[in-house]
Length: 137
Image: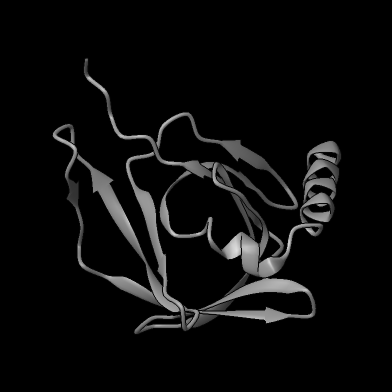
């Protein structure tokens, strides 16, 4: 467990070499949860029924929406969108969410074209991979 946390910290440190504005170009799109790491446990997901769709515009505002992929390439949704404001603070990329029920903050540890790692205020780390649509061929 400690090795996993150390690895994430190391990856986060290495990702700091890329300009934060450059990292933003990788954030938009469809993300599938791969792993959740808390202080007490780690859980790996081999399959997830939902994916996160993230859109951030040039004014650093946007939304995150949960989608359920279908076999025909389309998505089902409940049309609930979490409003996001992205801020660069103290050399960190922070996502500020606003929903009808709460407000919260997450920090982007790493974002590339293939990987997104986010940490919340409860010290839980979420690792995502870029979503790949179903291929039945």
